[in-house]
Image (spheres, rainbow, N blue to C red):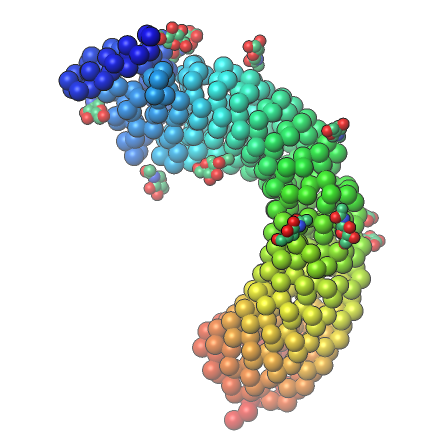
Length: 454
Ligand SMILES: *[C@@H]1O[C@H](CO)[C@@H](O)[C@H](O)[C@H]1NC(C)=O
Ligand SMILES: *[C@@H]1O[C@H](CO)[C@@H](O)[C@H](O)[C@H]1NC(C)=O
Ligand SMILES: *[C@@H]1O[C@H](CO)[C@@H](O)[C@H](O)[C@H]1NC(C)=O
Ligand SMILES: *[C@@H]1O[C@H](CO)[C@@H](O)[C@H](O)[C@H]1NC(C)=O
Ligand SMILES: *[C@@H]1O[C@H](CO)[C@@H](O)[C@H](O)[C@H]1NC(C)=O
Ligand SMILES: *[C@@H]1O[C@H](CO)[C@@H](O)[C@H](O)[C@H]1NC(C)=O
Ligand SMILES: *[C@@H]1O[C@H](CO)[C@@H](O)[C@H](O)[C@H]1NC(C)=O
Ligand SMILES: *[C@@H]1O[C@H](CO)[C@@H](O)[C@H](O)[C@H]1NC(C)=O
Ligand SMILES: *[C@@H]1O[C@H](CO)[C@@H](O)[C@H](O)[C@H]1NC(C)=O
Ligand SMILES: *[C@@H]1O[C@H](CO)[C@@H](O)[C@H](O)[C@H]1NC(C)=O
Ligand SMILES: *[C@@H]1O[C@H](CO)[C@@H](O)[C@H](O)[C@H]1NC(C)=O
Ligand SMILES: *[C@@H]1O[C@H](CO)[C@@H](O)[C@H](O)[C@H]1NC(C)=O
């Protein structure tokens, strides 16, 4: 009844154009006071986004403010990417008790997160990309409706508060690029609706708590660039069947790469680079399955992987980037890799690979970067290399390759870097290389070459 009366008055006042009248009855004074206090704590507003925030305009029409239709209470405050500086005034935001969405990402807010514990309706809190510091307060725990919490790209330190495990509606938790330390709390394993967990680029140590493998709804797991270690459980692929993005690179993980990853049918990206994984590359990754039609990036470089490259990896038909460099892989390169028709970046450098360069690699027509350097490859460069018309980089250095430098290399119109150094190439340097207009780096040193053809 009261609400209806307010609404009627508001309409009346709008149509009469009586601004002062509107202010008197429109919405709740405590919301307006809170917003004005929020504005007071802002030092600089270079884009002038808050210039409309004055008492002659009803606060529900201020830039970035949204109100509910019925209550005329502030339900959303969206001021992303406005270069605002200043602090988040303690009392102000915490008093906007009808707030559903608070997005202040991409500004220059500093200081600590104020108490927001009375914001029971808050669903989205995005403070990403500011210069906030201090700890992440446990008082966020009372914001029990939160579905998305993004505090990434700030200066937060200390541990991830255990209370986050009580935010049972959470689907996105993004705390990346801070200075968070300590362990990943097992309490996060209670977040049964979690779809995206991003703790990347922090200084978190310890292992992934077992409880996290209870989060079967997880689609994105971003833990790269921390100090996480120990091995991954062999059943990870059954525990997290909905994973699409798995990023664990630049940590201290060891042990085998679990073969059960091959049972995750939706995986797009596997990034395990720069850890201490050992053992063989599981052949289950390449078995014909749903994974083989989804996987686009397989990055296992900078580990301690040994054994042969499984030849069924040629089944990964969507693969655009394959990096197995800096491992201890041996044996021949399987010709079946020439089936990876979408491959753009292919790096097998710095292993112990032997044998020829398969002529089938000439089928990789999308290839832009090819690096097979620092292995024990021998034989001649197959003439099919001339088919790689998109090639920008070709590095075959530090092998035992022999024969002539193929004349057809001069027909690769986009080639910028050509490194054939430290091999046994003989004969004369083909004059066709002079056709390479884009070439900025050419290294033919440490071979048995005898000058140019005329
Ligand atoms: C405004 O909101 C506060 C806190 O929610 C409440 O105590 C007060 O009664 C409200 N005032 C009006 C006029 O609705
Ligand atoms: C916030 O609410 C507290 C208590 O509810 C009140 O004392 C304070 O004045 C309010 N601050 C603003 C800016 O509205
Ligand atoms: C208040 O904001 C309105 C825009 O909403 C603007 O036209 C007006 O000039 C402002 N008044 C003052 C006193 O700044
Ligand atoms: C914020 O600052 C950046 C860099 O100074 C500038 O490019 C951008 O246009 C500014 N944005 C706004 C909304 O003023
Ligand atoms: C937070 O805002 C940034 C843009 O400023 C956006 O890129 C990011 O996706 C948002 N976070 C969430 C969880 O939606
Ligand atoms: C959370 O809410 C409860 C009940 O309303 C209250 O007793 C408690 O103090 C609040 N906790 C925090 C951290 O604000
Ligand atoms: C995983 O969830 C099950 C039930 O859903 C529970 O019994 C078990 O304790 C949980 N495991 C961990 C490590 O939290
Ligand atoms: C890598 O793991 C092996 C055990 O598989 C261990 O012996 C070695 O010390 C680890 N290396 C590093 C650099 O952590
Ligand atoms: C996992 O994949 C293997 C083949 O690599 C298959 O034999 C097994 O049945 C799969 N397990 C499940 C639970 O899908
Ligand atoms: C694999 O894909 C097929 C067709 O897209 C689908 O019917 C099937 O359910 C998928 N299997 C799994 C384990 O996701
Ligand atoms: C690589 O793994 C082997 C065991 O397979 C281990 O002996 C060796 O220490 C590891 N190398 C490094 C650098 O961790
Ligand atoms: C492997 O080669 C690709 C393409 O040249 C490159 O982007 C990548 O950084 C290389 N990997 C390593 C570990 O250097």
